[in-house]
Image 1 (cartoon, helix red, strand yellow):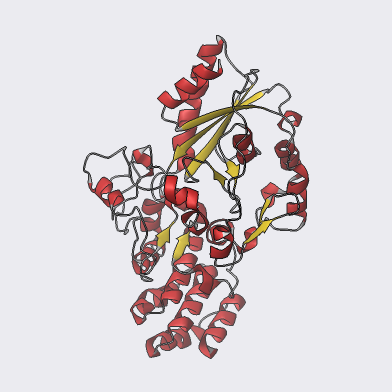
Image 2 (tube, helix red, strand yellow; image 1 turned 90 degrees about the vertical axis):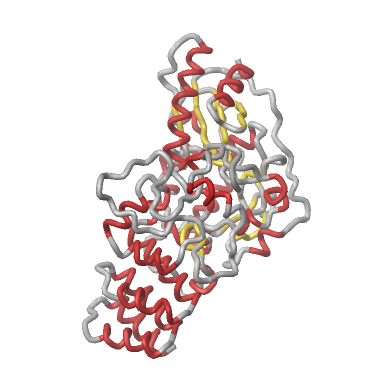
Length: 416
């Protein structure tokens, strides 16, 4: 049965497949300690007692389930799954590597440049469920399909299913694919025997990701060899999950990364050498004005956005300041997770790190945004620019601002 399932999964477009039995987690103690130290930040759903119980032993919530079919899809680099010479395909062909030296342009994590992977993989995972039911000869009413949205430790299941090991960057690393892969799990009530062994740790003495992390979020391995991350310092957490102000001391370290961060993957020898092209055109980067592949915009919807392939920071901020443009830009994209205000906040930080007077008009407009989170970070960015025009914009806002957090940022910016 396992071989037939793998063949059907590959036929559906998954890049690798592994099967493992459902049982109690090997890392329950680590998870509880990590949560106890508050390293999950604002992600309170991770610490809910019922969620912790389900993650540490899936059988506690789903006693009928017996096995996990774990699948991956590649999203790194450019694609053999070419889009037939379209503008979007040509755009994707230009961004196999990022030009991180141009501070005026934003970096969006590779996984978020195309369509929301949750939707793409969930659709395929449900098709796989139908295939598994066909192989089994009956329906599987207890089965559950999860794409990074349920209380499931997908990486541990993938590791046990032979799809990789936990690197020092806490990512699952496949020895012949690297780490640019989405994970999903289909939990079933079938007893399916896995025929693969867990992959041994290949990191060795390499410490590249720990040394490369700008904010010091990666803390190496604990006494038991488990990789440790402080999410509250992680650029991905700060630019996506965190809903409040980004700590001032961390803002300069974020650079021009406005949604997520790939640094700890970019420097990994295995990912650099073995990462595969995206296997589905849905994951291709978008050209200016384009929606994600397969997403239909309403007639007359705004297309005034710079795309996701090294876009202008100024244009991204202008997009986030316009409700209609933001809605069009983020529709069908994982980028929507940050929220309009959160994404505008991130763009302001990027512009502050660029520090060019060219950013002043957009930042001055952001000083009047309805959300104080945006106004506060625009003030910080204008303080970083420090030009006469920037200081004039700050002074003009002081007389009308009423939010205490924004006033604090205005004061700090004018003292800079």
